[in-house]
Image 1 (cartoon, rainbow over the protein chains, first blue to last red):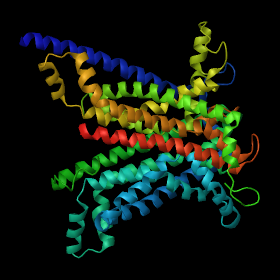
Image 2 (image 1 turned 45 degrees about the horizontal axis):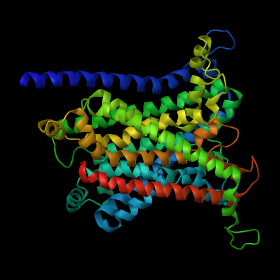
Image 3 (image 1 turned 90 degrees about the vertical axis):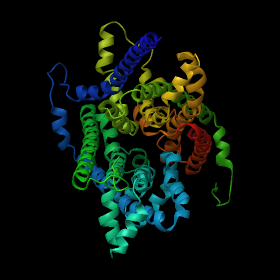
Image 4 (image 1 turned 120 degrees about the horizontal axis):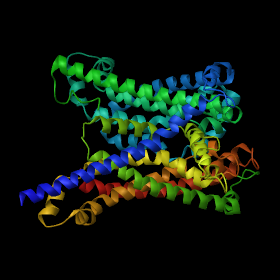
Length: 282
Length: 249
């Protein structure tokens, strides 16, 4: 009887491993080939000439493109900082003092998820028209709209971090030792949710760098709009920039996962703490 | 909702019955449904392949991070990636054409709805993995053992135990995928320059006046149509989600 069961389990495991191999290989082909194809396309020589990096080297010779890259990077930085400054204190405060408001804050933060970006454009269009005429028509004003766009993703990332620590006990302990609220935030809460903060920051940077709908319809030339326009004139260069922006996102993600891990390891090594103080960076 | 004299009007909503808007609505509905169902099936297979592996393994970490990035993949980059792969100058197409398998013999379908559907799958499948994996992780090995001790085989397990338990999560995730395709704009706009086959592009068109006329009121009417559909789908999703969490924790 036992031998029969073991036999069944053995064949089942072999079948399962075969299934996994097939699925992973198929997924790998579907997801990696297009990225590889972008590399291949952007290094093609004209006509029958050998492979070149000409398209990559000429990125700097398109002033509009360079301006768009800088604008998108600035937008990513502004949006991310503004998001953290707005969300982290609010979420901590709501958890500590206004637990009844938590549902409402959550609902407001997750709302942009259910509204298509193009619908946001319809509402923002007259607003940006007015702002362009009376206030400033700089592309950096897009940061206001992007702040709304990144709210749901950042909220969820930060919420995971805050749920993993005991905000109340930590802040009461710090307060009873004479720390000001600023110290509590900066020296107690923030270090404990550093992993979640990095996650939220990554999501917001990735979202802003990839954003097209709002910029295109509100008539601002950010990175993606410029890539799309350039694609009609010089496909090689625009695809090279597209690959570069993608690699940048991957690089940031990997960097963040390493920073998160080394912090956790160090904390374990130094304090040996297990319990509510730990595990915020998952 | 406000006409030229500043009074309220419903004329813009009446315009929603224009023939091309009805056609676009049907197009958008069908492409969203098709990519949601195909994306859900393949995403679920991939998620299952991940869930039966080592929960702390490198493969799982990599696939999950990659899914996170790919589900948010910028639409423009995505369109270019597929143009570079199977576009008329892409190396996959060139290889097939050299081997007498010209898959664009009838029309270059990459720049039409079927092509758009293929490109959408590139972000639908990863999204399904992210949404569905928690449900699969909730499966307990005891259920399988219980089935076996009662004499049930693999088929019985999936048909009577795991299937019904996962069904609400699967349906909910499919609805989320539907809403995701339904709202997409960047991919369609970067891939298809002519005809504006999806609703989101019609809004962009009515706002910019590049194609057709500048009709901000009409853009708002289409926006309301989209919001109503997406809201219905999201409410259904959250109801199903509530049902899921009862069992899979």
